Amino acid sequence: MLEDVKKVLITKDEIDSMVKRLAAQISNDYEGKHLVLIGVMKGCLIFLADLLRNISIPVEFGTITASSYGSGTVSSGQIKIINDIDVAIKGKDIIIVEDLVDTGLTLNYLKEFLSLRGPSSVKICVAFDKPSRRKKPIGTDYKGMDIPDEFIVGYGLDFDEKYRNLPEICVLKEEIYAGLLD
Ligand code: PRP
Image (cartoon, rainbow, N blue to C red; front, side):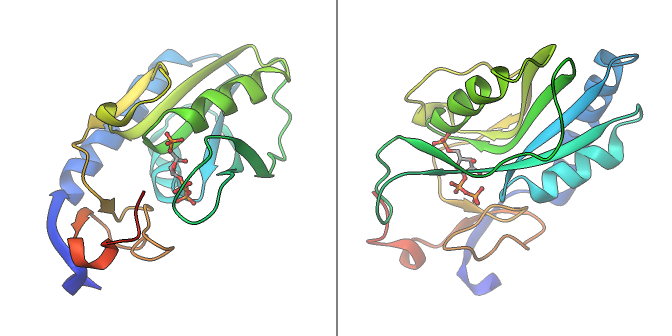
């Protein structure tokens, strides 16, 4: 697996301190509230687990799986829900937790979709942001870090479902994905 990696972009220590900073902000802001984290699968899995373990106030969580319509690597920009959350969010304070915001289409859709259920508030927490790729603006209330437009994997992020188990954020060698991207 490591032979497919060009370089480490974000180290485990950097990720750890990023997660601790975000969890401390959230714990402070949501003291006394009914907090529910909604993780966007599958990429968020490891970030969500780390965030939960560092939040010091009572918190529930659910997961949702969304997918872009379209064939191969070309997205039509339309989103569909593959698996819905199994927690009630009406009257609760929710934070949508994403590993990566790219075009912004997924988060825009999910924010609207979940808002229809009447939560008290909806905010967004993302680990990594590629602002140069944005197609639709989205406010990120809690953000780990901006990253350049490089093909990254690890810490839950995949290429063709692989590399999610790398503990650091790594840039993949071009020959691994050459010819397969839009
Ligand atoms: C990735 C990422 C976000 C989405 C962001 O998910 O985890 O959910 O893309 O892209 P956008 O801002 O352009 O909408 P992906 O579809 O790769 O699925 P995964 O989470 O299972 O890896």
